[in-house]
Length: 92
Image (cartoon, rainbow, N blue to C red; front, side):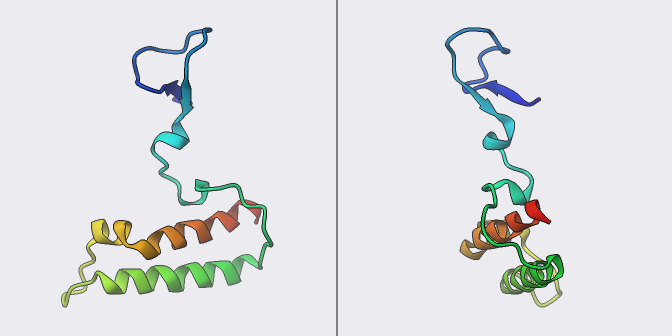
């Protein structure tokens, strides 16, 4: 589904109603947080930086058995910065 009514009351109608793109409702892809219009580094440089940041975040939420609490990872304030970093891949 590409779009839906903002309150999910009905399917698309050609009328003065409000609709929302699905991607803006529940973004599931990391690099959709914003349109990337800044500089673009070599993809491997970006990948290395993203990997380092994600490993750092995951390390903060890993127990002594190496199990990661991904709910905490997703709510970590640094995770939003990581998600923004991945937007650069739009241009590679």
